[in-house]
Image (cartoon, rainbow, N blue to C red; front, side, top):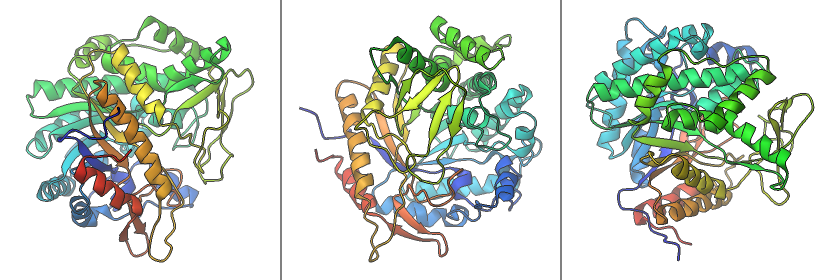
Length: 471
């Protein structure tokens, strides 16, 4: 019978990201990021003040303590520390994170800190971001500074959040600043270069002898052929798997690329008239880091069903919650489709909890040197509404409960999962969705900045405090 009890040291938390919660995007010495001008030019919504976490982190952490959360994911804004990406550090930015981490400790909430969450400094981004290998050096220097500066504050580090999202949204879907569409070779090259930067940061952390652990957060989606009997659909699933998952997982746990992975990388690059380059010593540092990673953070929201596709690329990002408007058909890869009977959110995200179990099983079988998983993001974006002072998000509760069931099943068969962070702690600014897509445990009235616990917050409190999931 499936256990319904989590380990006593399991982390139950909420997740945030600096640009999505802090506000004060151009204040207290913070440098610009590409999003600042991009969002201003669009004029649809502003990241100011988001949920004003810069000023309200202590009260938000008090809510974590009150609602039984013993962990929180936060990120350091690179441009708050180094406004131009390098040079002299900004004292106000450095002090802010010291104060934030001290507040975490005061409230008994363990900080899990990400160095890069989609917000390269503008000078870095405009100069090629991670397609420019000079920026690998800049990231390593920034990481080294943070490891030393916050050595007494932080025990859990992640280098990058969602390299796949950062590269695919910029180079494949074209929905991010300076974006392009279907430049698969640039997408994959940027992924490789970012994994080199990750490897160099991991080695710097270990060589520095710092206490604690370090890993990386990947956004993973299990890729199923739409028709399991169709060789063409199987090939499409493999293509999309390499584009989003396999290159990154091979780089993380092997430190190189399996022959089958490399063959598909070359195929995808050729389909957009490009090549894939590995510089001298890349694999040396990657292979070393592959043995040093302490953990993998998995951000899981959905899986995909892939059909073979022969036409021109046809992409439409559903950033408004108009259900059924999203399209993803990429020449050389395939078409993402939805099998009959599989539910979706208003943003066309497939709800398929079993995919999380299948991902963890796949990783443990392919990469026996993995050490542990944290589920660093999982959650449901909804158009939450207040009715009679209450936010009834039963649909979100069901979503989280179903995913936690599969996590318990993984733990029962020996997969090492040590924590779950719901995206998100509170309602936040969302990169291409503004404020209409709400994920939080706590509803935010963005006019007053009042926090109102949703039904999901009370439910999660019972789970975290009892360590039990009623099944």
